[in-house]
Image (cartoon, rainbow, N blue to C red; front, side, top):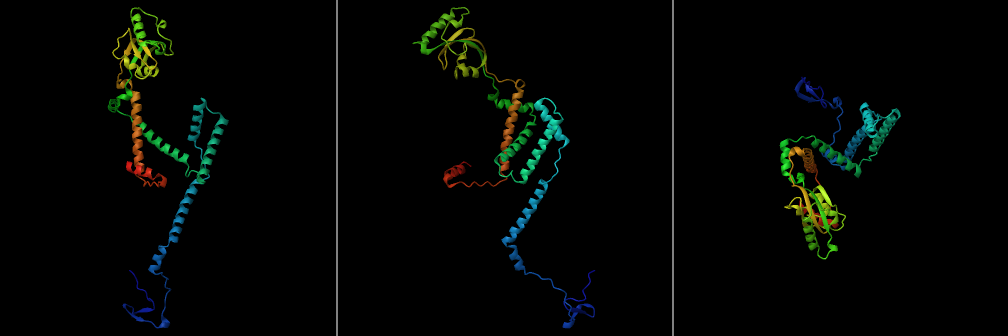
Length: 329
């Protein structure tokens, strides 16, 4: 229960009754010290002072900087057993043997120096505004994301659907085995007639030696199980398309390449085909994983961008580019 004070600012209860008061003589007034109070408008004015804001902000930054330095300036550097095993493993993977005692000590010393230099550089703020460090940290984030996606195991249904939707990635080229005789158009007035006459001569022979026919060339005299892509690489784009509908095991032509005319003896042909999933499972899994990583990378880019208000202060000389960029949004 609260008690009523006997003296309050020189007043005394009348007959000890809490609700009646009389005033003491001036000589009997006992005044306790009155605390000094600032007017409310003065306090408000002080709170609005920029200097106070600056001092408060400076104090906060000083505290944060001190906490950071306390952590960074730790003089204890522990080389754990796990780290030593890791250093041994890296050495063994490189040199195919375990390090001896001297080499292991050298590895540990180098690691300690690396860690010391790293901490000293942090205390000096050398990690700030460094393009290489920024790029490396960005790469580490991307690697973490890619590693997470690589842990995903696609189902057969997902792989089959991916194979169906990306047939051009996995379709195997047509393959050919053939021999060829070359007619150089620069050496004949009518290379077409020469090719026709040579074809007629070859048709009447059994097992002719093609070395005795045609003009010399650096092109191969024949290819075995060559893909259409490889064939076109050697003879020119579209050359293998001329094999469509040609009969097997007989000389035909002339066919035209980037170099001239050719008589062709087609020995085998395998049409382009889309393999079954079980034949190329590894390749499909690899492509599926890569596409998922790229898709996740785009999502991560968009998610990070939404965390920031991006302001581009275009130079006056690039105002046209600024308008073009704004129009593309």
